[in-house]
Image (cartoon, rainbow, N blue to C red; front, side, top):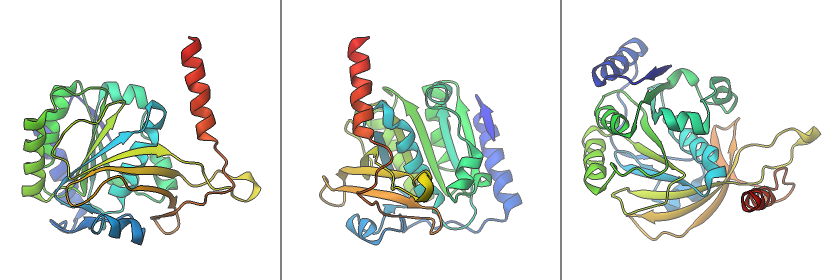
Amino acid sequence: MRESSPTLAGLRKRIARLTANGGFESRRTDGWLASGHARFDAAIGGGLAIGHTHEFFAADALDATSAAAFAALIALRSPGKAPLLWLRTTDAGKRTGHIYAPGIAELGGDPDRLLLVEAADPKMLLACANDAIRCAGSAAVIVESWGKFPLLDLTAGRRLALGARDAGTTLLMLRLNATPTPSVAETRWSVAAAPSRELEANAPGAPAFDLELLRWRGGPAGTRWRLDWNHDEHAFEDAALSGALLPLPARRAMASQGAAAA
C-alpha cells in the first residue's frame, strides 16, 4: 500500500492496524537478520544485528535497484509475517521506480507484509523514520533516500540508532546515488549487480550481488562477497562465476562512454 505525504499519526495507526489484524507474534529484540549463507553470516557475527542501523550504498547509479533488492530480501527473511515498513521520498520513487508486488512474490517474498510510505521531502522522511522505528510489530524498517541527505547528520543518525536499539527494530538505510560519510551505523555496505547464472533454455538467472563491507563496528571491514538469491530456499548462496548472462562491466563501460559523449 502506498500513502503519499502521510501524517505521523496516520502511520502509527496503520502499523497498529496491521499488527492487530495479522495476529503477529512479538518480534525478537536481539539476534540477527541472517542471509542464510553460513559463511557470510559467520563473518559478520551471525548476520545483520537486530536493533541496529545498517547502511546500503549503491556502487553507482546503475546499481540502485540491486542495492534496494538486497536490503529488501534480507528484511523479508525475518521470520513470521510481521510487516516490513519501507519509507521513501517521492523523488526516490520517481528515480528508482515503483515496487512491483508480483516481483516480490516471484522472489519468494510476501508482498502482503510490505507497507510502503512515500514522504513528500527529506524532512518528512526523517520524521516518519523516527516514528516508524518506535512502532511495535514491524519486522524491519527500510529508509530509502536519493542523493545527499544533509538532514541525516550524526545527531539525527544517533537519534535513529537509539530509537532502533530501544525498540529492537532493525533499521536499514538505503542510500542511493550518495557517497558514504561518517555515521553511527553498525555496518555499511556497497552493493553492485553481479552477473547472473546461466539457466536452462536461456531463462533469466537469479538476482546476484557483489557486496563489499565498508564498515563494521564489531570487526574489520574490506571483505568482498558475491552472492545470489535462491528462490526455493529463500536464502542467499554463493554465486556461480561462469555462464554469465549479464555482462555488467561492459554495460557500465557503455554508460560511461555515453555520458562522456553527451
